[in-house]
Image 1 (cartoon, helix red, strand yellow):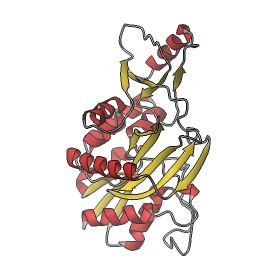
Image 2 (cartoon, one colour):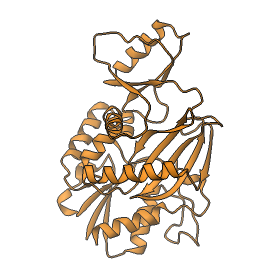
Image 3 (tube, helix red, strand yellow):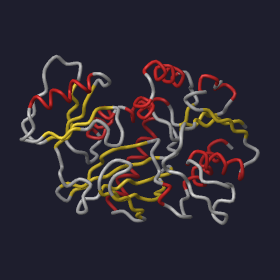
Image 4 (cartoon, one colour):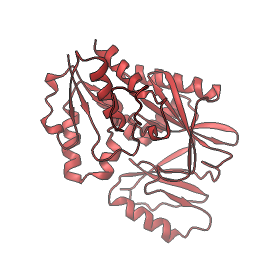
Length: 306
């Protein structure tokens, strides 16, 4: 049995901590995908595993493998970090791999926030009212009330903009012109000043298939800002809606859900889905010993391929 794992490049910002008692398969702190790789080699030595990155993916012959797992590499961060030509070659290669987990239809769906917000609204999931503005449009963007703008694809708080009644139209125009150099669309939502505050913390919930793992409770935004705290329990409403969502995505796209992060916000005492990630940052660095995603995902991979 042969598998391929696509790995991130560079130093991970969410290293898994070493623990002789909890993780005998690790000698040093490593990235989550490296921890999964090491666990699989330790627990299931009968599986042959090759690893690839965006720099070596052109050498990947998918016919040699039962599955090619794309656990923590997505279309968004690669789009933001890679030069255009290299990114296009990466996408072209991904499109030619039929045995991806998750499959390319789901990967593309999650990369396009405009598409999945429309899908969420259609399927009656709680989301903020959202407009997608086409940056290639010849009409200028006019706003009349406070709005939060974010290009798609994007991640963390990159290239966001808050429009208020005090914002000059020239500032909005300048922002749109900057986006046009790289993006095709920008998402526009009502600006919620209390989002990510102590009163309305953002809840980043983690799931392996439909099993709840943990939540990162956040005050502030972006990977290096604010307070980030591990939280074990979540409200029943978030639990039930998240499970229904993962089940529906799994059936709709006919793909295993190895790892999913569903981010929740709160407005006027009502929870809403802010984002869905299939290749999320894990915040593993916040855990001392009890982080279990490497073992849980490794076992799910084995159950899928055995």
